[in-house]
Amino acid sequence: MGRAGPAVIPSRAMADLKIELEVPEDNMADVRPRLDAALTRNFPGGMLQRRWDGDVLHLTGPGAEGSIVLEGGKLIGRASLRPPASLMKTMIEEKIASALRDVAGA
Image 1 (spheres, rainbow, N blue to C red):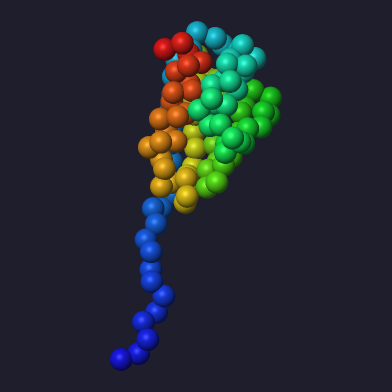
Image 2 (cartoon, rainbow, N blue to C red):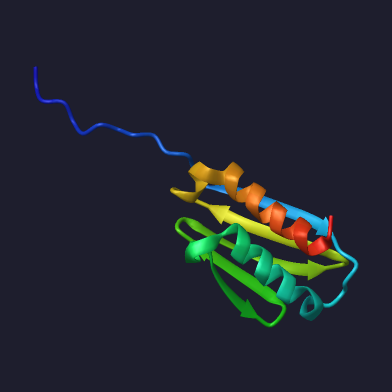
């Protein structure tokens, strides 16, 4: 028998997530300081990079790209996850949702 090839390790495909939460504010400037603070608490140590582009918050991390916007009285977070972030989708979703709830006072 010949030598076996390299081991194939399955990985989770890309995963998408979307989180919406109603807020009383209709201006991202009113939400921004609380959103920054909540994300810093939930993602300490710089593992989630944030960049504001006007009223859009762009998020990046190992295997993750996303954004948070305020549209129609709702904070809407969207992200595309690939390994390694896709392997932690549930945890990432919980932390983003928790940050948005903190902002909304829910």
